[in-house]
Amino acid sequence: MKITDAAGKIETLVDSLRDMSPTRVRSSSSDEHVSENDDERSSWIARHPSALDMFDKIMTDAEGKQIIMFLDYDGTLSLITEDHDKAYITDEMREVVKEVATYFKTAIISGRSTDKVQSFVKLTGIHYAGSHGMDIKGPTNTDQSNQGEVMFQPASDYLPMIDEVVNVLKEKTKFIPGATVEHNKFCLTVHFRRVDETGWAALAEQVRLVLIDYPKLRLTQGRKVLELRPSIKWDKGKALEFLLKSLGIAESKDVLPVYIGDDRTDEDAFKVLCERGQGFGIVVSKTLKETYASYSLQDPSQVKEFLERLVKWKKQTLGEEEEVIHTID
Picture 1: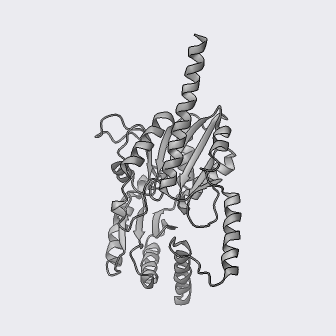
Picture 2: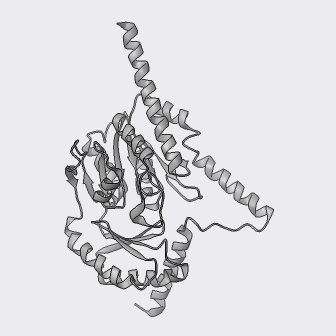
Picture 3: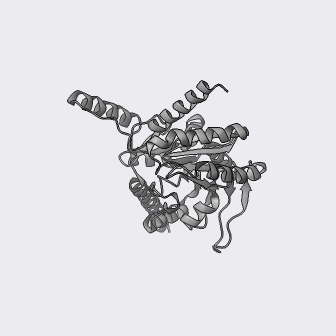
C-alpha cells in the first residue's frame, strides 16, 4: 500500500471518529443557525418521535400481540462511562428489567462479552447475546453459578486469533495515553474515550496495521470505540433473527419485537425489524443521526421510564382480564 493511500485511510477514519463523537456539537454563531438546527431537530423528531410521547399508540398497536423485548446494554441500560469496566446498571434499572422479563420474553444483546454483561445485570430468566450476538446463551436458572446454555457461537474458530490480537493491540497502543483494549471474547474493543483527540490518528494507525496482519478480522466503529471482529456475516440483527427462530415465533404474525439501543451496531437490528415489517426499533440518542429506528428516547433514564410504563400497561391488562373472568364466574 502506498504511503499516501494509508494516510488517506487514516484521515478518513479519524474524520469518522470525530463525526461519531457524541460530545462533538456543531457550534452556532447566529440566530439563523440556531433556527436551522431547531428545524432539523423538529424534522428528526417528526420521523423518530419520542417513545414516551407515543406510548399509547405503541400499546394500541401491540394489542393482541406478544411483545418480545431486545435491549442493548451500554448507553441503554447503563450510562456510558469513562471507565468501561464501571458501566454499572443501577439497582432501579435492574429491578425494572427483572419485571419486564417477568411479563415478556427478554434478551440483552451487547458488544461486550456475554459473561461481562451477565456479571453486570445479574438477572436470571433472560437471554444474553454478547460479542454483538456471536455468543448467545439461553436463560439461566435460579442458581447464579449457572451461566445458561450456550445456544450459538458462529465464530468459535476465531477464538485463538482474538486472544492473540488482544495482546498485540495492547502492546501497540500502550504508548497512547488513555487508550484501552477490552477483550470481549469473540471480538475486541479499543476504547479511545479518554484519548486526547490529537492522539486519535496514532491510535487509528496502530489498529490499521493490525488489520493488515490479520485480514480475517474487520473493523467497525461505535461510540468512542473501534472494534475488531471476525469477518463473518453476523451482527445484532442476525442475533435478533436467531433468537426469534429459537423461540419458535419467527413466522408468527402475532409477535411484536421491540429493540432498544443507542449505537451504530444496533442499527443492524433496527434494519432487520424494518425489513420484516414487524416490530420496531427505539434509538437512544440526544443527538440527531440517521437511524432505522421508528422511535427515540434520549437517555437510559427515559429507557427506564418506558420500561416501567410497559410493565404497568401489562399489569393493567392482566388485571382487566382477571376482572372479566371474575364477573363471569
